[in-house]
Length: 137
Image 1: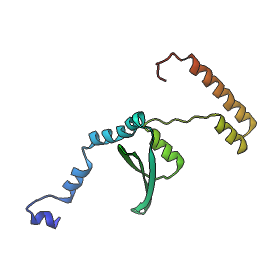
Image 2: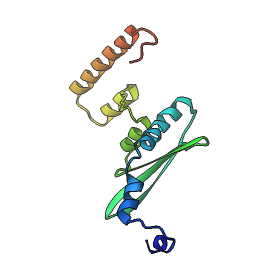
Image 3: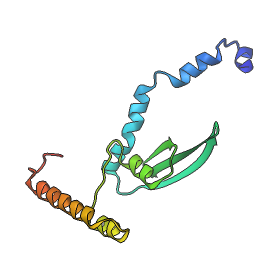
């Protein structure tokens, strides 16, 4: 602050904070649209993350990138689920396929739940064949 006063700039820390933190919705919308657009046109991604403490709390910054774009997101989690949420944003999608069912069986999921999941998957497969082409979801 003293330096700005030495340069003849009369601005308070509150005004600086407001300039840095308010009225940036347009920029946040643009940032939020970057990764979904990149998913549509990119053949591959690279990802990495790093952790740090800020004000006594852990935070993790994940970068998802390729040579043409980079997306940086900071969250309070470093889990695989968090990474998938970031990668798929704004959608939350889960797919249960044959491999997932085998894994669930190996992990000891009850036979009644496995039968239920198989029935749901069979119904979903049947419905996907009934959907007209080019009709989206």
